[in-house]
Length: 390
Image (cartoon, rainbow, N blue to C red; front, side, top):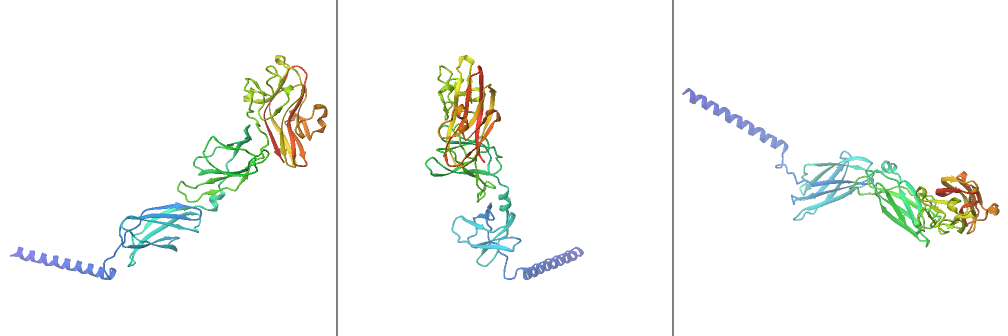
């Protein structure tokens, strides 16, 4: 009998506890869920943020819940937002929105979807970088190791190497060709050992170039550096190495330059003015192997120059001369003889490695080397030449 009484008491206590709990749950519902149960619409899936210049693009998918009618994106600690409508279909729908006028730096975004009753989904949080003036100021144009005209009339540009992670995508190059036509070309960038060919380049002119960067692989905006100008490119076949047009072994005839016949004193008077030494150089030699002396020997190029002050400089390879060799520039299509050297626009011993001269009007100017070598066994080589306008 006592057992039955105890069991009855326990049942009564259990019923009181259950009733009390139900009352608390009902009270909670009354307090926090007035109007019915909480509804959460389906959230945006596969959300991505794409960086841009003071903006981003946000994309996502709607794969469930056909009752969604709009979504809202919040940023700046929810002080700013944008709302976009959604027209759901039976399949998967996509979202894509640009958010402009953002400050540079890392930005966080909150995305919620809504149904027609105004119920909001659980939030989706995502962050992305915004790029602007600070990033732009860190960018530089790609360097140029060398730019020279080849014998075809094209400029060959050797670009400096860059870090593959720098984001450099391309280089835009503008120049005027031989037909006075403006050429604008976009060259894809590669990090190392990069060369470009600018065909039919107008001798004596320069090219303009600017580098293009993407701050990340998925960025939506390309950043361009301001244009830089190359040096004016005057010489065809300017050296390092110089090219030979005769392909006759150690001695040859210099491509793209004028060489007087008395300098062509090798191989039965068929080659001269170029040698294979040091990879390919301008040269003169007399004496060895019974090569005859050189009187008023000339190696030069004729170039149309604008008014200005110019410096003609050389990279000496080897100097084994006794008689003088001159760097010289003269108006017209040829060089004067040594006896008339004072008529030149400018001249200097080639041992000075450079020579300056002035041009007062646009005209053809011949620039190069002049020598009379009569003392036995003399030889010189020059690895490269350069002409710079001050």
